[in-house]
Image 1 (cartoon, rainbow over the protein chains, first blue to last red):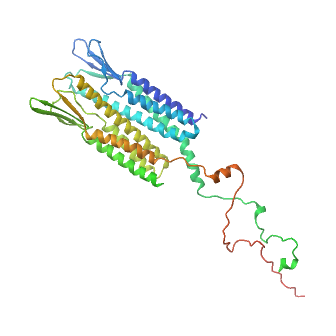
Image 2: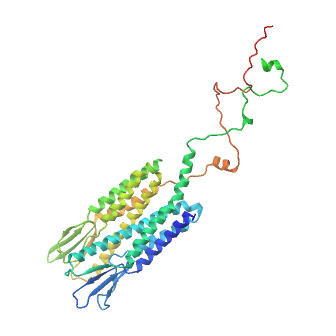
Image 3: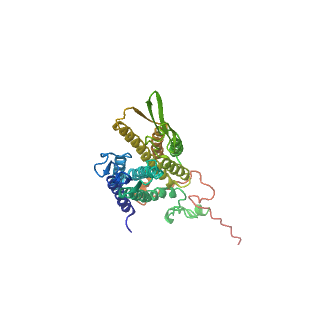
Length: 201
Length: 198
């Protein structure tokens, strides 16, 4: 059987890597119709870009979650490194849960903002009901990375909990088997050089 | 459950409650003076509370309500379950992590809005203020992290007796100081010898 801790470590690193890579990919684009040629504004977690390039200049992304994603991915990677050392592994396991949780929170927040953007565009508040929002690869990478990270963090806890329960079981009932040589025999120990009368009394 | 972990569980509940409350408070507000009139925009994490700009400026809701409530639910559930299932304590860490991620993202989004308003170079000045909702969310995240750490089980130290037991097959038995009637006395029971009647 493959070591559960190793699988957890691989999943945590994979999740962190996918999320970090996803932050540099385009997450969604908004297509604005009615400008002669359609104007497409795409965004990563760092910057927004426009197509055609003579549209609005590149600028920082509105939901700029690049650094939070990178930092939480780093926390997950550090947690894996710490878990590899047996003496300080108890620090790494909670750190993995915290990092994976933070990444999931950031991605959940980001998805909520993109959905809101989609609602605004669909409602026609931009002046044209034909405008569209498209989800792109970066968003899927972020979501998949966050889910894989959570699974890895959950797997990393298994061994920790099993080790924790063992001492509790020891507190319940302890049965000792005494060696027969140590016990006082039912009729007492024979005292050497003693007369028979005293023994029989 | 130790006092520390009970205190941690109570704080987890407090953090979860604060997080939920934060979603219903004003997340941010934008205000400007125009021709002697004060125009103001206010929004919680769920809905726009006031919009004097009537949608002319694309201010909107920062939707951290759902993620924050989800994080609070995870924390509260883990705190309740941990009284019966100790393994559920990990959930409070997960919830705290979620909350930190959400709070960080909310603050980052507000900062991005401030930057965009500055780059707008508008003839009028827009004052963007962080609302009580986001401030409370940050506080909830901080309390959440502290409480989740308190809620966890610290690794047990290996007792010297256990180390000795592991070292060799030596077992020390504690025998009662006052023996009861059921124990065999050290010199045994007297054998009753009945006199022969010859």
